[in-house]
Length: 219
Length: 219
Image (cartoon, rainbow over all chains, first blue to last red; front, side, top):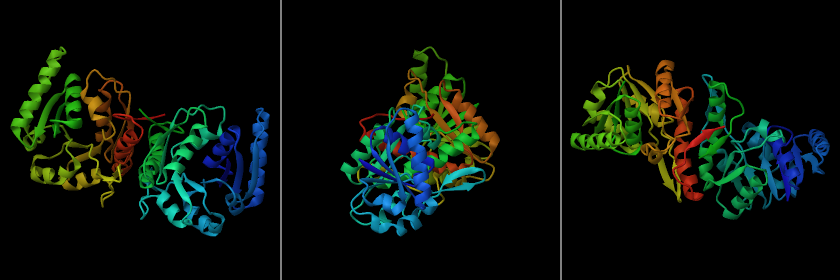
């Protein structure tokens, strides 16, 4: 599968690139600047080759990265979602686009979910993209730090939401190609709000209780 | 500690009554009808005595139950919050009032968090009560079924939110008097929205994935 990671030079994009390259996928790192994307892809290749893997990773400007990928993960900060997607809208056709986006604000020392007018970031993203695109939301609650450390076992849950069952199942399968990660069906795309809201809560709970890089498990 | 459980005849109120009675607290079950509260308290006493405990549980109408309790848990359905609290508002003075309340709706087979105008149920509850009352939110994400089955080990997390640090710490301590339950500081009361939103997600994930009575763990 050809997977593009917009904003794949850091945060959750880094870990997904490394983990899915290990699983044998063709990875395309996207960035606002092609140079930055190429540099990141070279460093990922080096890290993986040092561990004995033979990764297939390339770097391009975001639009070119999205263009002929089967799956596009919008792993950019929420604040840049609208401008980034509007700028490269014509690069999308009938891909599956994954939203790990989370709108949040800081209130009196706490990170709080900032409810967008449409209800959640995944619904906003859907409305910014052409009609043929299938939006699925996932990976909001996995620690980016742990994801990027390929020596770490990720015994966590990823809740996947989407209105198209086939696309949702495909992303659930892709999530479970990362060892120990458990994909849970979270229902319709509108439900993404509840999954997105967990992210600032994880950050706040970590800060308030002297914990670090928290993820979630449903038991 | 004298703990009143409004709506303590079922759902989460039942489990909290049993578990806190075991921990040695004085429990007052509240209900709209005193008769129903008395009946529930008698059945709880019987169940606990059969297990070798000597519980102190009484039953009263909601207002009388709240009156001289140190802590009042509003374990009633969200839909009845406003009418119930308005009807017994004069029974509150300077207690700690606990909100496990969750506003939710059903959308296309999924349970979805229904964001109230004020942001969350805990903030709504606070504004319905007299000023001296300290509102703390907790216990939204613990399975009522497991809580009421005192043979069950509850190795889950309870996120506690509140604007008064002392009240919050007290509820965190009270939560941890239930063996294995871990209380996590969730910050300010406004954060309750993110904790409340997890409840419909737990229900939806359970339905969609063939699971049952889910709770949450931060790892």
